[in-house]
Length: 261
Image (cartoon, rainbow, N blue to C red):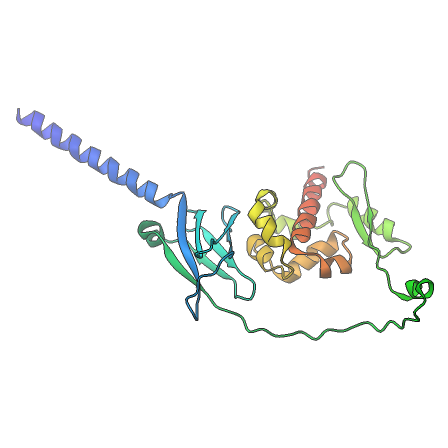
């Protein structure tokens, strides 16, 4: 009799322990976290703030009340981006998962107008003459059979094709030092291209900040990657962040093909 009671107690405590462990795991691996984004100075809610989980490479935006929900777990890093505000990176903590919604406050940036330089093009009023005076920038792309896309040689000039072919057929030099050191971050490119919220965000941005956060690289690294992929200076300067993402992704996919060979 006493033995039966003793065994029942042991069974009870084991069941309780398993339940607590299971609850703790579920709590840690919570599928979503929620919160509200506010202006740090006024506590006004911020609508359409872009939010990206850098760890899982998924995105969302805040609603009219500044609220958001996103898939995340403890130690994931969330990136908040809003025009005119300083970007934020916040790590998901146990307390956030445990206690639920939190308030995220973003700081407004000072607005500074950059000097605009207008090229001096003297126009005569005659269309046929003026059309010849206005500079036209052509960035030619060269396609290579067997690869997914071509390469931009920049302005048309003698030797541009040879430069491209030299890069293609020398995979030891073709971005090896850049891509091999960042293979972990660059594997995120496919996920980034598939997430509609991330693509919508990048399509409106030109500052490379979100790309830098997602890929864990500096602005100079992005420019260097594009130069080594034979993209023109015009493209590097004026493309939006989504175009830059697609360019890096295509170049990386082709690099992997060449590296395997």
